[in-house]
Image (cartoon, rainbow over all chains, first blue to last red; front, side, top):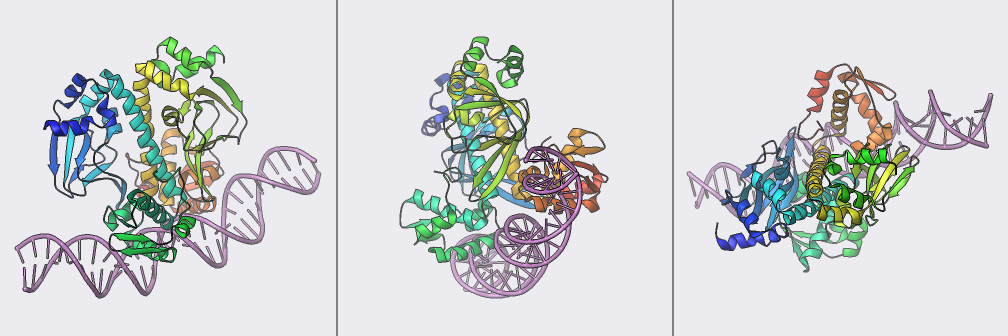
Length: 229
Length: 229
DNA sequence: TCCACGACTTGACAAATATCAAGCGATTCG
DNA sequence: CGAATCGCTTGATATTTGTCAAGTCGTGGA
């Protein structure tokens, strides 16, 4: 692990206030690894060996039951994932796979638990990080419980449009992954896009024009307490 | 607030390791209050003024959007709720109402944030509590994303049966509340019970007999990573 | 007591969503 | 290059779920 990469990780709020020696001690036994796309990093039932930090690439957290599978969330660099699991010493609770070639730093979970006990700034930042993750899942839970598939898609498009700023937005993931995020089948995602055509949604592969934001919003009824800001 | 009540709160793992003076300082400005049934304690958009501790009674956390409403979770005594919101100084993210006459201790959120910074044991316990709440919502999210309504009901009955231990189980909430927890309408809950009749589920008001656990399990496909243990 | 209301159930119907099948176009790989 | 595969779309159909309406039953007031 090179110093430049170490600095990238250190810049995360979670670690930025740690005492240097605690930070170094935590990294002992860690390793930075590159994975190709579509590799399963761990399964939900596995015991949590490592805290993961996505340095580059893209990772999907997902869950399986029966014969069904659903995306829990997508991780974009630079961000930690499975912090909660690493801190409680149990199963991961979610499976992970790379969606693209990804560089991932893996820190032994035991080191993280020690760091929490030794470094008070890290403990406080962990509290804030966990609270934020918690509210993230709460939003996702509300989203799927209180909205239809078409409404979830409409709100997703509005959020992406705001974030990307330009005229046309580009989907950051394949449509089948988007479908899984929204909790619908790929077939129904196609149909949902058709349903949104009268609301000014023009689809061109991964590029999407929103030509009538007002109408789309009246359908989507965005909510600050559900949609990411 | 009497000393006996204070001891009940102090017995929670979250507070049991706090330095006495920190615990007392945190309670300054707190008050124990009794609410009748069906009272809204706060709305999801409200700023988080208080950490709540349900000492007696029953509370429902729920969310609203469009014209729909959904139960997020039920709180049983003795337990804290909205800890995450109290720690991050933002909106509650969920609304709360009493389902029965309830005694609730309310601790100013600012005090809780101070306690986290001052008392390291409390900070560590908060980390564990938040991680546990996080995994709780993750389970609920998987449940609704990967199972049908009938499957959710079947698994709920199996969990209650195991917890209550006896021959017949008694629903701890009204059926309309159960329906909201399961993310279905009361009408469909009635139909789901009918669907489960061939699997040995006998309903008698709030009392339910499971006469064929094996068949019910083969339908429900319980999972350690979804269902509460 | 008796009435009103609420919880629950059932039926009929509509909406939302999944499944199965087919086909198209682009990419991958032997 | 050519074949195979994959992502996406569309149609037909089935399943799941919600909505509206009506009716029963029990409880809690007036």
